[in-house]
Amino acid sequence: MLADPQYALDLAATADAAAIGAEAPRPPRRRAAGRQGRQGPVLHVHLHTTATGPAVGTVGPVGPVARVDGYGPRSVETVQAWIQGLAPGAEVTLTPVVDLNDYLQVDAYEAPLPIRLQVQERDTCCSFPWCGGTGRFDLDHIVEYVPPEDGGPPGQTNTLNLSKLCRFHHRLKTHTRSWRYHRQPDQSLVWQSPAGYCYRVDGTGTTSIL
Image 1 (cartoon, rainbow, N blue to C red):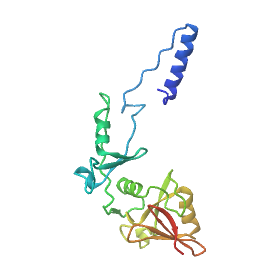
Image 2: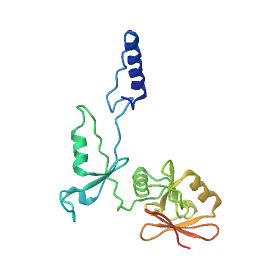
Image 3: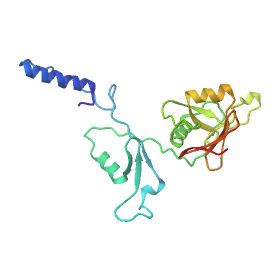
Image 4: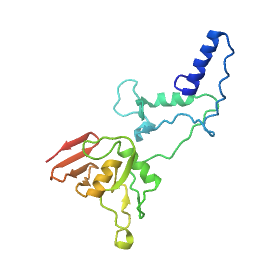
């Protein structure tokens, strides 16, 4: 209740009314989750392919582990208990699995939702050296997009040619044309600065390599 601003105000008003002997105001009726208005919490659960069977190489009672955004690693049994303990009438929506091993491509400039979701899950933050921003982001074509009518090849908007950049660094890379980068076979990115310095960006952060 305290996490809900309106209910916190109602709670305070009830306490004030009780203190002076007045009639407490009636709280507003809450809408059911999933209908128009307030919706329930959204949890993104990331599961490895081994999470559907017995864990390999584990010792003792430790089983498969899921990564839950905002909560960190949790056992699969814990996630199952969360779902089983939902209140009656709660709505659960399952979305298609985002497989990071898939190679997706389209001929258009704009990335459709499946590709955007794939890049969003793969790149946990802005891919510019030393940035690490996790807010709003753009999808950047590592190799500049060339319209087909101008001789551009098909499939330029694809899994490997897209990277997540925050708005500031996307504009910096696009409009100044002084920063360049390419993707390595291991999926890491190597950036070259205007001064000629090179930086490697991967899931562990940024490393100066020259």
